[in-house]
Image (cartoon, rainbow, N blue to C red; front, side):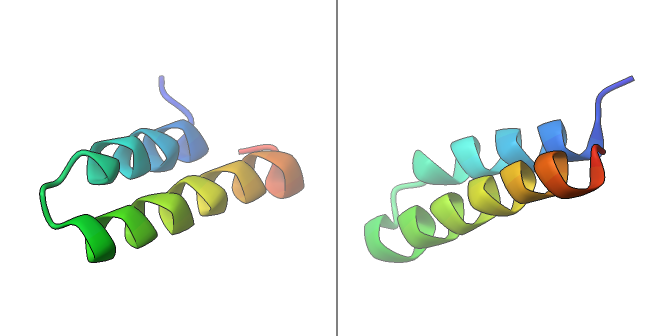
Length: 44
């Protein structure tokens, strides 16, 4: 089973490749950061 934070990080990586540069890149970075924070804080 995939951890929730891993799924969030993967979603962020996918967003980095969406061809709407400013919005998708910012969202991708924020989503990856959220996944990393979840992994560190909650151990999810």
